[in-house]
Image 1: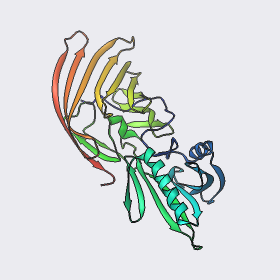
Image 2: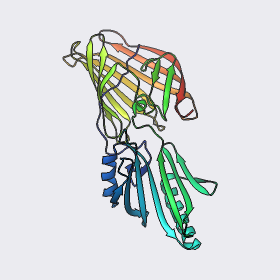
Image 3: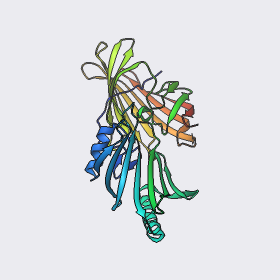
Length: 319
């Protein structure tokens, strides 16, 4: 039995599941991104003319810098940010500012590693590279490259998944399908979910779903951390509304899911409560084994309880 599908939601003002700079997510429509960067006091001074690169001047952690924002010319979405600070004609000043940038970046992006003379910051959402280049006149520049790695569309988040997931296969599915596939850009490859509407950060807010009793309307609501907290599915032909609500644990996993079914008079006809106990995870932090407790109640009947053991196999695009 499959109870969970896609639904509606509130748009948030930021995205916690993306590499950001100064609180600006490095993702989404390039036009919107360029506006946000200018709000951070970066001044535009040109572009490449082909829709790929846009040039700015501003301050990088308080020091004057040049910025190049790169976008995919087909999707018109942001791909990366590249800062250049310099030139430096003395090694002492260059080393001092490099150490300063590493200290500032560490406060925002965690610890760094050193490879071949460059410095790298890695997290779940992308990486930041700090490197030095020498110019023909003997001076040097400090370069800082921001590369997000998360998919733009967050359909996998609706299932509590992390990372750039390609495929999920679940044994004993209850509130999910036995198999789900996602495109490289993060969109769920499910033809039954139609007319999707996403917010500016790639979170699904509204859709329609094809069912045996006609087409249902779905809406999704998220909390301030962009976690799905409520999905509402309404089938007007059947005069039925399904409301799913989600509670999370400290690891941002779905701890508890409840579903209530209402008729046209808003009378509850059925209630299902599902509590998860995850006992195994993969290297990306997604559960691979779950002990699920289900309590089921239907109008004019006594509630019933059962336990189900689920396992999952997950494939990722970067494998």
